[in-house]
Image (cartoon, rainbow, N blue to C red):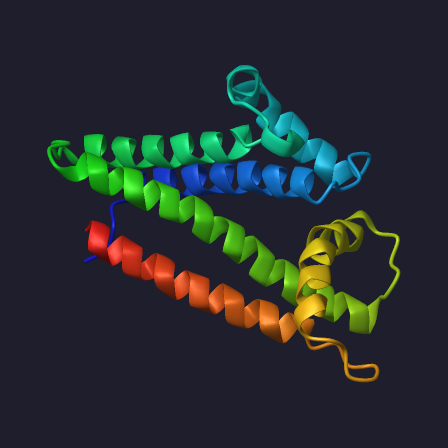
Length: 185
C-alpha cells in the first residue's frame, strides 16, 4: 500500500530543504568559495530562516551549528505535518520523531559525503582541475575528508585509496544510524 500524495509532497519538500541547509553547513565547514554561484544560491535559499538562529546558537571554534539545528527543526516539522494530516495523535511519537529527526540530519551529512566522494573520484578521472562551479564545489567539500583519510591510508604510487576508507566509514556509520532508528521506533 503506497503513501498518500500529500505526505509524499510534504516529505519531499521537507527533506529537500533540510538537505540544502545541511549542505550549507558542510560548505561553511569546508570553507568553500562563497563566490561560487551554487554556494550563493544555497545561502540565499537558507538565509532567511537561519538569521534568527544564528543570533542565538553559539559558535564554538568559530563553527556555525545553526544550519544543523534548522535541519533538525525542519525534519521535526515535516514529521509533525505528516502525522497531523494523517490524523494520528502525537502521543508517544514525539520522542521517536526527535530521534528520527536527529538521525536523519546525520544521515544527510553521510549521504552528501558519499555522493560527493563518488563525484570527486569521477571528476578526477574525467575533468581534473575543472573550472566549472559544480566540480569545484565537490572538490572543496571532499578535500578535507580526503586529507583525513590520507593520514590513515597513504597512497600507493599513483593510486589513492582514501575513497575506499571513506566509503567504509560511511557505511559503518549508516548501519549504526539505522540501528538507532529501529530502536527509536
